[in-house]
Amino acid sequence: MRQRIMLGAVFLFFGVGFLLHQMDVWNFPQILGDWWPVILIGIGLLIIDRTSWVFSVILIIIGVVFLLERVADVNLGVFIGPIILIFIGLVIIFARGNRTKQIHKEQDINSFHFFSGADIRSESKEFKGGNLSTVFGGATVDLRDIELHEAGATLELSAIFGGIELKLPENIRVQVKGTPILGGIENKLRPISKEAATGPVLQINYFAMFGGIEIRH
Image (cartoon, rainbow, N blue to C red):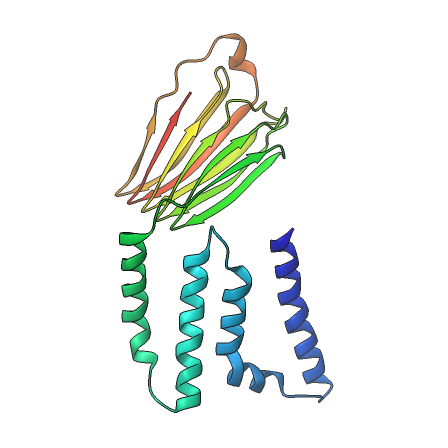
């Protein structure tokens, strides 16, 4: 709900801005050029929460540095890279385990975790799949209580400098394919029964870069 409102607000802001520009009410491109650091700070403040606060802070840092550069007429842009690297290093060293717990009953799971983690469980009775990504984080996804949609399901998994543990129910057909780049996937699923061999398929597509994915019952 919140993400939909935010996305709608962004389109509304740019739509009204360019509309007024075409009506010669104001010079919207010039306003964007002059005040984009403030806009960047505003976006960072809007999206800050427990699962994406690091990314939000990085946006705010970039906005603040360039805003100070404009106000003080000092070249501070060269310091952005080192400041962000120092910030990320401090987060990695001192950040405590920031894991959220989620229970889903919808047909889809869509979750992104950056420098954080999550314990996710789905109880969907018509599971269609979804998208799960972790960057410098980890997630445990428990799908043992799901029932696949009659047309099957597709689950996209991405682990970049992170890990994903996926727990699946017994006796469902699973197909796995993906791309490992200095990472990999470990499939610990047991053979299914003959009765389940004709049921719907859960297609798992994965991308693992400097990370790992484990699939088991």
